[in-house]
Length: 304
Image 1 (cartoon, rainbow, N blue to C red):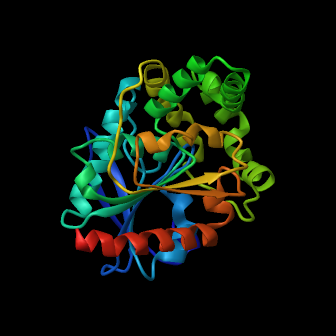
Image 2: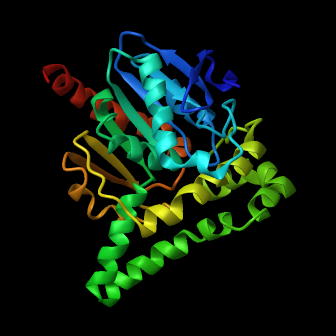
C-alpha cells in the first residue's frame, strides 16, 4: 500500500464517532505535527507523494475517513453527516496528538469536513492552523449563494450559474444506484488514466480500494449538501487559515471564497495555476507552500 513511498508507516486503529478509523504515521517525531485529510474518491494514499517530501522534517498523520480505505464503512446515509466526520477528526487528534496542536491540511471532501471541525469551538483549541485545498465550508457556500441572489445583478447570477455548472456531478451523486453502477462498470479502472489526462498527474497511483471508495463516498454528498446549502449555519473560526485556490479547478470555482474573511479573519490566500488534484500533480510545490506557512505559524504558536 505504501510501497511507492519507500517508508512504511506506523498504523494504529482509532475509535472515531461510532466507527473504527485506520490511521497512519510517518516522519520526524520532534517536528511539527501535520494531520492530512483526504477527499473523494481518494483514501489516505493520495497524500503519499506529499509525505515523501515532508517526512524528514515533520511528524505526519493521515487517516482513511469513514467509508474509505481500511476504515469502517457505515451503511446508513445519516452516518456520513458533517458532525460525525468532525468528531472522527477530533478523535484522531486526541488519540495521536493529545499534547500538541496539529497543523490540519485537507483536500476536496477532506477540506469540506475539516471546515466543520475548524469552525467547531470545542475542536479549535486542538488546531495550530488549517490549510484548505479545493474544498469550501458548505455553510459558507450557502451564505454565498444567498448573497448572490440578494444582489440582483447579472454578474452575481452568472457566478452562481458557473459554479452550478461546475458542480453537475453533485446532482448525479444524488440519483439512486447510478453513481455506484458507474464505478462498477469501469470508472474505477479508468480513474488513473483520467487523472493523467485531465489533471496532469504523471504517475497516478492505482489504489486497491478505488472501486469501494468511489461507491461508498457518494454518501458524503447525499448526507450533507441539501441541508447545508439551503439551511446554512453561521460558522466562524479564529484558527489561522491558509487557503490554496487552484485557478484551473474544474469543480470548485475561486469565487466561492470571495467572502471568506467574514468567517475566517486570520486568512492567507494563495491562488495557483493548477487543477483540482494539484497535490498529486505537483507535490513538491505544495510541500514548499506548507513549509512556508507552517514554519511561519510555529513561532506564533509557541509564543501563545
